Image (cartoon, rainbow, N blue to C red; front, side):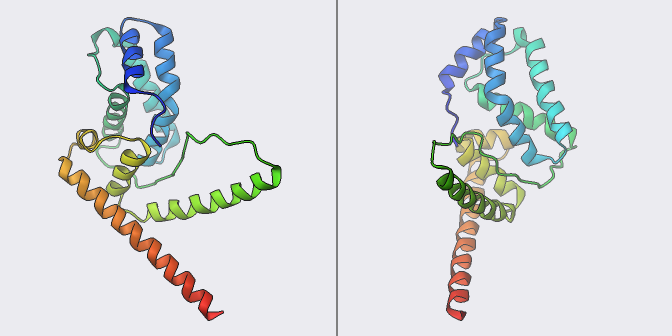
Amino acid sequence: MASPFTDTDDRVLWQRFRQGDEEAFTLLYQRYVRVLYSYGKKLITEDAVIEDLVQDLFIDLWQSRARLADAESPRFYLFRSLRRRIHRACNGRFNERWDLIDEDLHPVALSKETEIIESEQSKRQKDELDAWLKSLPGRQYEVMMLRYYQDFSYSQISQLLTINEQSVRNLVQRAVSKLRQLTISVVISGLFLFLLK
């Protein structure tokens, strides 16, 4: 899911925060603490560690606000900063545990029965997608999550992961290809089981 906030909104908050505006800092924190925590959980399994790293990131930002440069994309800056902290904390080794969490869904008021049915269908689909995504190599999943759930450009992802842009595109292409193969095999095996009945 793309962020509902624009880079322009974030840049204005970033500038105000760098000038010592506590309200701007609080807004940046509220916008990104859950998103950063969810991203961190995709890279390492220890909840307490990722909580500490996210909190430390924001504490360090506040303490060093006067020395920070203007950020073209504060969201990108925050993701990159957290990823570096995780990398240092794990000595460069990420655990390949991936939980697909969508923080941006806003439920619509439905009848209780419809809500229960849709909730069950949504959970089943999420579980299937989660299982397929977990079958991807860790780097492919991370690239897919950054591209399609965080809406980063290929260029930003290449900077974030410190690999060239073509490698990012190749990882996305391989991941999409693998997901296509998985969905086709699921459909074929489902059809085969239906025909055996």
